Length: 205
Image 1 (cartoon, rainbow, N blue to C red):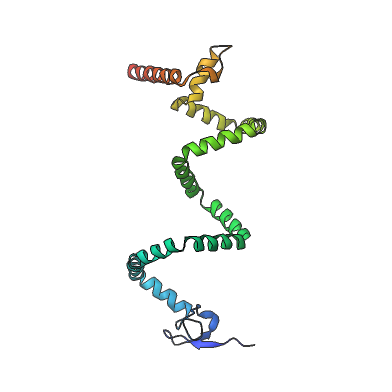
Image 2 (cartoon, rainbow, N blue to C red):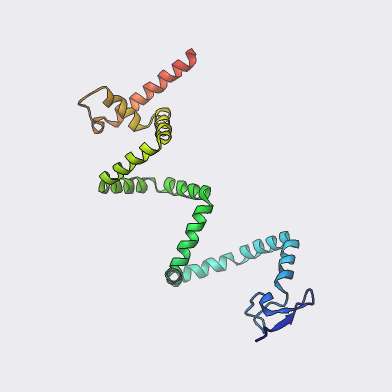
């Protein structure tokens, strides 16, 4: 069966209906201008379209916010149904997006961590305690296979004087002292001492 055709209102060329975008308010369900002409118009009037969208956004924003506020449950239900219906599709799309946008993912994760720092730390502690042996075993294998990662991590700990590095200084000089026995106040005092010594060494050189 031959596909129906119509004439574009812009270029006046007869084209198949598939060359016209869908438009529910039109009598035939399609735009009067073809895809190619609409694309050309968007390119030639990019600034005009952008400005118009901004104006319309600001104009209708209060109405949209009021509607959203009055239909919270309805929106939640629709979103939930949409997520369930497109679960596999969304999963694939998210995976592809993550692979193509590693920098954006890092920024998002960093923002989330800064906003929910205590929650993230507590969750990490819980996960570590529940899977301690497995995590340590995997970490040991990973470090063995990637010695440059270990050297870089140790260097960062040493430069930034992290708590674990300062604790290690105390435990290395004692056979009985445990890391958990060292109070935070002592760690802070030791860190300050090391910073002062480094500054003196730097000034001497």
